Image: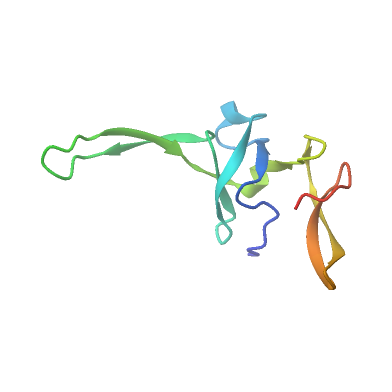
Length: 113
């Protein structure tokens, strides 16, 4: 399994499908990326409830609501230029005498990075 992903921390993504269909069509910022598992954590999406026990005396237990992971195939990157969900292409540009690979929006053709 390849660990290369087109989505990075800080990108805005739209949830297109998945286990939690109530989030389909909604956008959010990527908080964390797990390339080996091909999963991401999106701010405010796929919320799960974790029950905790009090560990020390005086500490209270309870329910903690936190973001769960979403498989990267269930989200699309939202282009910062055209504000539409898009697939990601790659191109090479010259910068300071070096050739670097950058992500490109497939809809408008502008650089994402």
